[in-house]
Amino acid sequence: MSAYLRDYLSIESLNCPGAPDRHKYLSEMWDAGDDWDNPETPQEMDPMSGSYCFFWDYEAVAVTDQGKRWFRGAKRPSGGRKYSTLLACDFFGYSGGYDPSPPRTYASCERMAKGQERSTQLLAPYWSGVSEAVEKPLDAAYPSAVHLPKMRLKAVFTDGHVENYTEQDVVALDVISNRKTLKTFGIDNSDTPGLFYVPRIAVK
Image 1: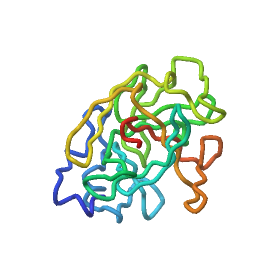
Image 2: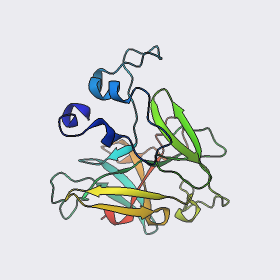
Image 3: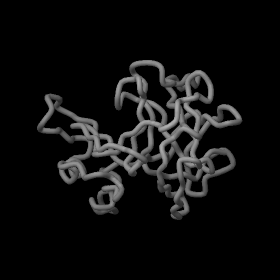
Image 4: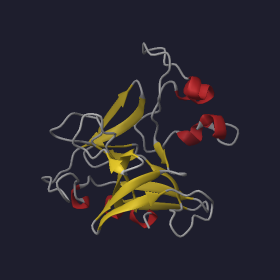
């Protein structure tokens, strides 16, 4: 990302104002891009995760109240009949190894109800929390939107406008593990990246 955008964005624009803090190596990793090496880890190359999700040309399975739909990120500024116009949004995820279950946790760069500050060597500082309600899944594998922690998030679209949305305005994206079969990771295996929430209006 930094290789493409460092000439257009200041480093401050990558630090979410809702995050509990900024990663202490944010400037260094932005300058290094794919060559980033965290001096505190034994790995030679360290894939860092930040505060935003970028959906250009991204595919996933959206889990809605009406069933599952194929989410296709924009491939051109105008979007298209089959493509979303969502460009990026605040990171908001569920499960995915942030904390072992039970209980599964939610994570976001934006403050959530009763959230706690967390960070790792490979994750920018974020808020982590659990639902106040008892989990009643949408189906066998997915939590219902009514059980999400209360919070406010932001999304930017390909035409440049920004929208604010709440936890009640989102749907979950399940990450595809096999592009040929469109099989997804779900949330019940050890290597899952978890679910990522996006505004409902971004799913066609």
